[in-house]
Length: 275
Image 1 (cartoon, rainbow, N blue to C red):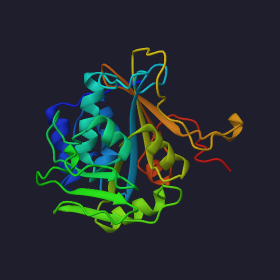
Image 2: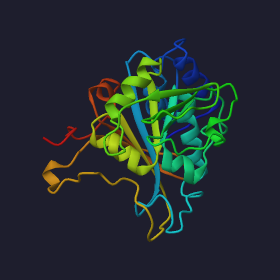
Image 3: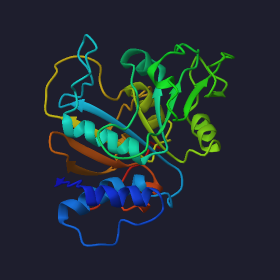
Image 4: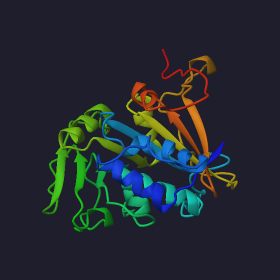
């Protein structure tokens, strides 16, 4: 497991890479600085083509909240900083409507320097109220993906897709967002939304940030809609582990784009999907 050092010089380089003004391969860096460039560099790059990364923070026993729904302090301070760095490097952040209603997230970048991503909510039935925090006008793009003809406030972009049993197809969602110029996307939550994109094989990468606490019960991080019955059929991504400080992040490569970016090193051959 490699510790990372995200100092101002490293972060300025990553932001320059995001703008197409620099690269992650040049310069003199310490081992921990190189680890930070390896972890965040593939998200900052725009020469790899469309990328979809999912990030989830959970406890040691795989929980993302308590039985009462308290999820505020699952991730430690370094885990939260990691999430905000990822937001700053992607074009848009996607969440499901249940997460939007329960957590009222702002989806802004506050714990590091960098631009706010487009805020995107998957809301098939149009349940999200127009005064939700992520729909507030602040100069950042706001997008609602829905299956109903529900009007939204001026400035909020609406993507209308056909649904099936109140579910929207991950492939169609990504295609529609890419058509709007959003190439690098992060699926931030919740666990059900991430699991649906994972099972649909639409993720380039998956990052699981684990905090050192035991909750004992509560919602699990990832629950696949159609779980495998045999371990031999399980998804076995190539994985690297990085120490963030308060948390540990497992960075998983899920398709050829991630592997082309050099992720991961010194790992077993990947089984990217069930046959």
